[in-house]
Length: 190
Length: 128
Image (cartoon, rainbow over all chains, first blue to last red; front, side, top):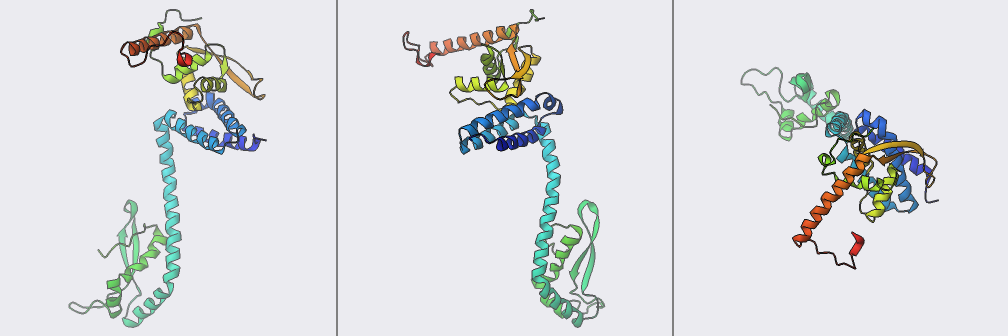
């Protein structure tokens, strides 16, 4: 029972997938033979019932692949994978900002009410910022200045005096991460 | 037909992988895995060639006319999968001999410079 046909066929199939690292022409002629030799190696390792042997086999096979597949082809594939990893980062951003938003939601509620009570005007301050690829997006912050303040007047509201040192007014940017895909970074007042 | 006019020397030195594969084929035709088994047995398992190295070398050796594809048939010692067999061409045989001679000459130089001890007549360790 040392040789499990299922393990062998799965290993063989995984190896066949890895063969994309080789040019199509080479794969067409030798792909099946290479997979066959790999399965033979697997069978050998399984027959000895050696887990270490199987691991060693995979390590040496991956090394062999990296050494013999054309470099341009590998970097082409890495580039493709790199694009997917942006999607993975975006997914991560959304999860993290949603979790943080849930935690700070009660605080946001209190702030929103007090801004409204403190001075006339909207809760949020909206500003157009240039985002990725020069595409503009609306960035929201809690409003900390009085919208109707004349020259010399106290522009910063009372709630603002409390919010600004702690940069709490910037927290609203968490929504920006969700909305427009701005990366995780609480950009300062600029 | 064989290209009799080709000079074996122009393909030297062979890469270690190619030289090993040709030695494995020197005493008869083998399929890919059979080549690997022969090499592993001869080097006490120290050299295990990966499929990429093996078939990358085979591709070049076919292009250089060192080996030829024989038929595809199952190996009675393994399973009933069909396997592609390879054997040396006459030109390949001359090339592997030339490479062995080149290496033997290098070993002689190493002996002359006392890098390698001279073999004692009776007890040649390992049977080089």
